[in-house]
Image: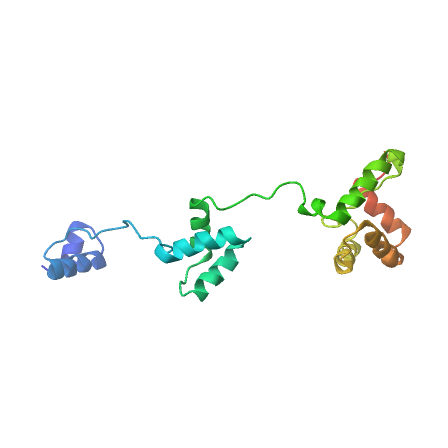
Length: 188
């Protein structure tokens, strides 16, 4: 019986029948081959020991570890390193407290702010979050403001205020009022 005729008789595809016949000729059986199974971990032995020591020495990024392992002759991908770090419980979560708080200059400024914050009238405070600037103004001006803030790269309050002062002339007072209203800072 031909493969085509057998396929038609049993209601299976012709290619399936051809594959079964090939398997029977090569192995003497039509039983399916093994699927899946245990795959040994890529990061094992001396690479595992090195990686455990390396992660204890200093801070790391997953992409950095991929590159370092490649330099040592082990080609692995990002997911493999992530799985290893996760399985070994080497990952850490960032805290909600910024690490910069421990720097002496930042600690001094925080102390100053804490000391004088009760003397500031709350209704006079305006918070502008430079990283999540809302761009609900007209699209042209909203994106322009975000672009200018990013380009200024100001990381202190004084530097941010100076940067805003420099490019404030690019916007009309009406556009500024619309911006603050859309951002939720308008008086109620």
